[in-house]
Length: 99
Image 1 (cartoon, helix red, strand yellow):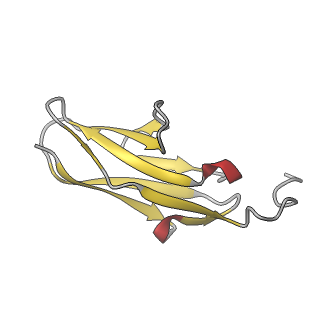
Image 2: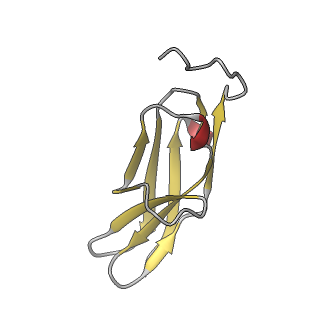
């Protein structure tokens, strides 16, 4: 069975400046077979991406929230503890307007 699913963020702690890049990595402590990964934010049903890494190249105001990695090996499914991503600088309404 799958266990020990965790999410690592770069920058660490999931605190990212508006417009910067955020990379999330999904790690599995134990699990065999072909692993498939899906990424979810909050209670959104549609996956944000597949694969062990999720990259947000230009983080926006609406990218804050809890991100979760779901891993399946065809027999069992395990989910990571949600990682809280905070977008810094979103209180400035002029930030990122002239892009």
